[in-house]
Structures are given as structure tokens and as C-alpha cells.
Amino acid sequence: MSLEPMVWALSGDAPVADVNEYAVLGCMAETADRDGCGTWQSKETIASRVHVSEETVKRCWRNMRRRGLIAKGDQSLVKHYRADRRPVVYDLLIPYDWFSNIERTNAERARLGREPLTPENRPPIAPAQPKKQRADKGASRPKRTPSDQEGPERGNSETPRGKTSETPHGGTASHRRGNCKSSTGGLVDPQTSTFNPTTEPVASPVLPSIREPDARASKARTGEERTDGGEVEQQETQGPGVPVASQGVELLVELGRREPRMALAGKVLSDQGALVEGLLAVGWSWSALLNVLGAPLPEKITRSVGAVIAKRIELIPACPPVQRDPSVLPAGVPAPRTVEQELESRSQHECQGRDGECGRQVPTKGALCSACKKPCSAGCGRGPAEPARRDGLCRGCIQDEADAALPRCLDGCGRPAVRSDGRCPACHREETGRRAEEQELAQAREALAALLGTESAGAPS
Image (cartoon, rainbow, N blue to C red; front, side):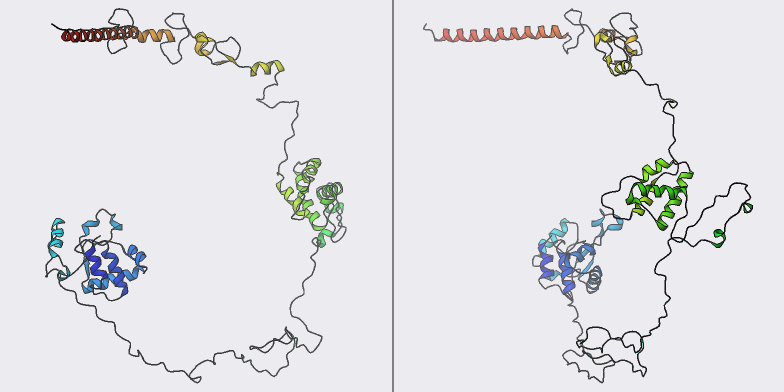
């Protein structure tokens, strides 16, 4: 951000045409260089900052380019942006004569690799043309008379009604329209007779609880009418509103006797009885259905009892549960164990291999696991073979093999050398202690010699 472009844009020296160009140019000058070049704010950013639309920003850019206030600059400055998101780089064409210290500005341009400013490449900018004034500006607006208006005069007037010579008959009529208060407070019934026929069909107020039986089904069926040779199962319809007797209806009636709150009647009893009849036909027992449907009702019922029973019937599976003999165990199920066997199976025993350090679970006390049962392949007899080793060696033989691969101690003790000085840990500690003692003895001798030398030098000759 530089001060020169902002002063040129906001001080009034820039020949902008309106307030929109003033705001857009000032927003662009905020990010420009000292010479006004290299600003690349997008139209979305400028629109959100100066509170105008994006189309207004584009129109201001177009007008200012046409009048020479701005021009497209070096587009390589935005090459680090994605190709489809790169904004346009603009240069503010501040005139050469406006700069008070043109040498400093040209030095800055030379540092950035730009050509110096001259009166030829930065000429003065012509002022914007003033807007055209309206021809009728200042003239008084003529008043319109009621005759010039097309519609009725505005105001709180009465809406005219069409005049009819017929006397109102049937229905209701409202009061005269307008800004008035009703003395009666309602509609007026202009009927002149007590007979007022209606053209709407009259519907039955109460629907029948059951469907009307078919004429063919209401006839008594005789044995000659059947062709299957079986007995005639005669079902009687006692009358309208009484369901046909069936096992499902009898089960629901029995449920109502046991729990009076669950008693059903009419069409609800007939419909739900047909569903219960189907469950009985697929194998559900009478007692099982009574237990399911006779469950206690909730304390607060938001629906009818018939809806509750219908929902319970809907949740019953289509196939009944299979009844099995409890004395016959299914295939794959082991026989029950005794108390001693159960206690023995629950007790936990550990393998005592590897001198009691194995710890694996075994079925019986004193038994060895599969890994500990295999002896060492070297025949040392110290322990079982390690399961992870393919050569079958025990843990002691593995350690001996690892020690044998190491070099021997330099002091000739025969132990493996694991220290950097070529000694075993024991010899390394002894050597370290010996060197420490020698160093302390040497320091004591040096201190004694220094003390004796001082006393001899101070004695008189």
C-alpha cells in the first residue's frame, strides 16, 4: 500500500464521474504501488467492501478504462493464482504532472524493472462529462383533475352494486358497503318464506357398522349346492351392526369378558376378528393370542382401545414360534455338565514349564502346554524348546549360542566382550576402578610436590 495513489484517488484530483467510480477507484488505490500500478482486487472483493453490486463494479471499470483512468497492467503478477481464479491486474494512470517527486517514483519503478514515467506515457486525463440535466427540472408538476382520472376517485367511498328488480330469495345479504358501523352486527336473512329448498344431496349421517350382505350370500345354502361333499358350515348374520360369529370374534369376546376395558363391538370387532381368525389358521394357539392381546393397557391411552388391539395384532408375526420338546436337545448342543465338572472347568491352571515361568493356561493342574512339552533339540535338559525357534533350541541354548558368537574378553576371563574397550562387563568395571585409583594417586603426588616446593623456597638460606 502506498500513499500517492490513495491521495490522488480520494483527494478529488482523479476525474471520476460519480460516487460509484470514486469508491471503486479508492478501493483499488489502497493496494496499488507508488506509481499506481499492480492492483488486482477482484470484483467480488471490491463489491463487498464498497457495498455495491458486482455489475456496478464492472460498469465502473469499463467506463474508467474508456476515459483513461485505469488500464490493464502486468498480468504475470497473478500467475501464482489458479488459472480459472486469476483476477485482472489494473494500473491507475496517474498523470506525470501530478507527482511532486517524480524522481523518487521513477527510482522505485527502476527497482521493479519498469520503464520511467514520462509526460508521453502518462498524459493528463480529461475530466468526466457532466450528466445531462432533465428538461423538466424545476418545473412544477400539473395537478390532475377528477375528470382526467380513468378510474373512480380515491377515498373512502361506497362500492356501487348492480341494480336488480328481483326480490332477494334465499341465502343471506350483507349491509351496505362503506365506512359505516353495523347497527345489527351481522348478516341479514332476506328470506320471505319458510321453505328454502337446497340443491345439495343429503348424506347419511351415520355409516352402517358392517356392509350390507349380498343377496346371494344371504340365502340359506343347502347340501345340494355344495360339491365338495363336506358338512355345511352355516354362519348366520344376526342383523345390522352384529358381527358374524367366528373363532376370531369369539376370542375377542372372551378377551372382553376377562378385561372389560378391552371389549370391542360392531365393525371394529368384525374387522379385528377376521385378522385373529387368520392367525389361528396359520397355527397360533388360543392361549398365546390371549396372552399377547390381553397385555395390560398403559395408564394414559391417547387412542381408542380398538386401535391399540389392532396395533398389537399387526405386530404379531405371521408364523407362530416352533414348540419343541424340552427333553430333546437340539443338534450340536452338549449335554449339561455336573457340578464337579463345572467347577473343574472354571478353575484356571497355569503351565509349570520353563521353571514355572511359562504361565499359559492348561486344562488340568500340573499339565504342560504344547510349547513346553517339546524338549530342547540340543539335549541340554534345561527346558523346553522355544515355539518361535525353528531349530528347536531352548532359551538357555539360544543365549549360549548368542554368547559364543561374540568375541572374548581381552583380559582372558573367557566371557564375551560386550564393551567398547573389548572387555566383559566385570573386567570393564575392574579396569575402570583401577584407572580411577591411579588418577587419584597421581593427583595426590602432584599436590604433595607442589607443597614441598613452596616450603623450600620460603626457607632462609
